[in-house]
Length: 448
Image 1 (cartoon, helix red, strand yellow):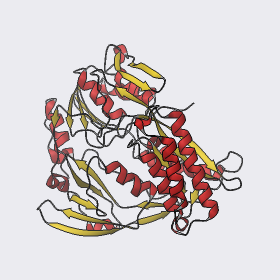
Image 2 (cartoon, helix red, strand yellow):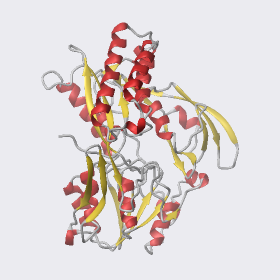
Image 3 (cartoon, one colour):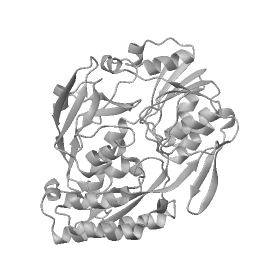
Image 4 (spheres, helix red, strand yellow):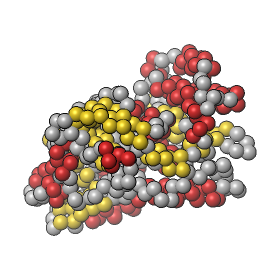
């Protein structure tokens, strides 16, 4: 049974890590072979099949997907490298302009680590983290505004496509920046990528793939460590940083149980990409003494109300502030919007990403002795909220917009968390707030 999720590419973590067989990096740059062209054509057919059978909108937003398939088959004939072929397959789905409907290409034999993270703050992009030991450390600084990346202006509308391209579809050996530092000075930098070799996955079957599967699970566990919930208890206040909606009912109940020992809660959903529907429902049921309508789930089979069942006396009844930002997506922003619509919490921070579609991952593979694994993330449902609107491409606008400046980022201050504390009657210095939940990079060890 597939689990419904509400964030891009089947979780961006677990599915991509388990996306199967690696292809050597140089193969993507070499002239494409007849066999690889045939494989790419099969991948394109599989993407079309997954879309045709499962996409939530049976009209495909008015696009003639059969004609589009014929067009992209012709384009595949002109692909000169395997990388060109993968980009052609990806472009076929990209025509829907749906961030949850994407091609997941075969896993390559290296992981590109750029050594930096950027984020939209308001309408501008800023560097929020720079990794020690990378080329980026010498050239980039937290708080720099990113004016362009590889010649492209960085904006909210297109950022997800840029990240998909650089992180998954076509990693680059270097990225070129135009930056503005907090003092206003503009400069250009080129940052070299570090490549982390991965073990070549040849067999993920139970019979022959124990070691390969163990390696994938170990790699995923390393990454999951940084996605654990963290919390700080300070008197009558608990601050809960929730990085992803992938908690079991028991885990939600345990954390809500801790919150019930306090009168006030700050739930920090910044950077939270969403997660599973059952976690969303359990979370919502843990804040209300009555069942709450999430919205109407819209699929090609019709409409169905989605309800979160109350946890009754086990629900948290105290004052609540929810923090969101431009990276808060799907289940995270649905939670925030419902809490806002119901008047259960004050929402502060930045406008959320506006990516709330529900999607499923459909796996495929090619080959016999050595198998190539790939897949499709396909949107299977949209959600219309109780106000009659969808958050897709709109996002949640906070009750109070609070944005850090470049200087505050550079100094490690967190004025958003400090303001959230102020709203529940607690004084928290912005510098102290910035130290409560230190940023953690996914460890490089154990990934090769």
